[in-house]
Image (cartoon, rainbow, N blue to C red):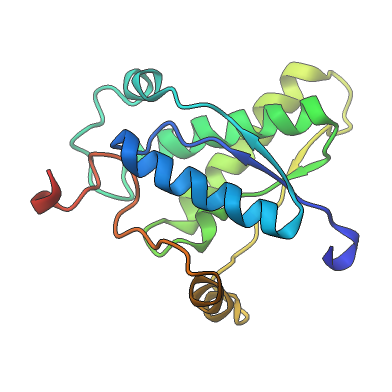
Length: 170
């Protein structure tokens, strides 16, 4: 892979609703990983647990406190999986989405990094570091759009959770 980096995809999206939407997105991710020969790990779908985690934030606007809470939950699970697998860095495709706040993603990633490193070690050395990357600049957004076409990917029209769905979809 590029620059000696061999990614592993950990698919953990308990926020996605409804289940049919979750399955479409999951299968697209898995299909792409398989086409590239990349390890793909299913993080399981625990939507009810996610609902409890964001309880009280349902009416928050997109890019509000609910999103921050959601990102932190998902990135902490990702960081835990990275530590479990001995992977020194974790990143997220959230930063490629036009629906997301890059600042919230970075805060969530750094919070996840801190949480897992404090839990697993008392040494000053980090076991796992968040790789904050703006996937929207330097031609990467255009590359993303080209890959959507080249691979015939499904391109969703909302973030994923029921609280971000277009009102006409409910």
